[in-house]
Length: 376
Ligand SMILES: Cc1cc2nc3c(=O)[nH]c(=O)nc-3n(C[C@H](O)[C@H](O)[C@H](O)COP(=O)(O)O)c2cc1C
Image (cartoon, rainbow, N blue to C red):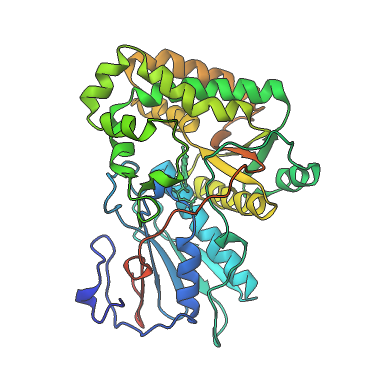
């Protein structure tokens, strides 16, 4: 369904719609760019972004996730990484079409909108939604083969840069194991955090391959009985009770087990400002697309950097502050971080043992509009 009038659009503030609707067809450039932007990953598939096009300018804006509890907000680290990933896909699409463009940052605090991407040539002709590599990018949470990742791929990935962001590929066992251990410790803190538990529970979808937003249980690698267990701990009070008996340690062990055995861990590193987080998101997407295109599977893990961000914000559970502080002291040495550099994201990478589906997205009509007027 397309919007027949502004009133029909499902966009709600802060997505301000103010213009006449242009009839789009699937070969419009705006439509193609919106498909590319929507293919980018978001934390727990929460899809907190909206897109617009007025014939010359493409817009990326914030929109509080619909069915998923809001956790990160418009300037949250995870949201800005997702903004970077969407921006990367839009830029990559314009480059495929050899269309010159200029990226203008507008409002990285509230995302009303985050970016204008001005296309500096008359876009004419038919722009088929393309089947290029970023449409194949996906999350694979299943076990991987032990086979090492090819050295050419390590070399290619290690050389990628965006602004101050860079990639570190860990293939040597001692460093991989040391990082996986820090991840497990961060994951313990994560399972003791009520806010994170409630976000995960609100994201989970058990419709098996049909959920248009949120985390589809079909994409998760759950142990036998895992679904039942996840359903049974929906209420935080039950989780909190089980945590007295060490449930958080058990869940962290399950969460980190595959990380420990992965042939490679890839870290996205960079500076801390809003724009720098967006740059890290662009690099994250570029690396993820390249790894998937090389036939490798990717599983992102966010808990390690998230707990360190939370430590700075004072939102780590009291019982875990000492443990997360220790992680904060050990990580810079382990990753050879320079002054001011942080970990933005960690990937587990390897050859897949099974292929899996990419999570579904909201109908594009809910995420994108076209207008002859400037939208913001
Ligand atoms: C900022 C960010 C954090 C993420 N953190 C995790 C994570 O900790 N664990 C995980 O399994 N997936 C994580 N993901 C992957 C998303 O859940 C996934 O991209 C989303 O569900 C869409 O699925 P797709 O990648 O198959 O398109 C993260 C993605 C982003 C952008």
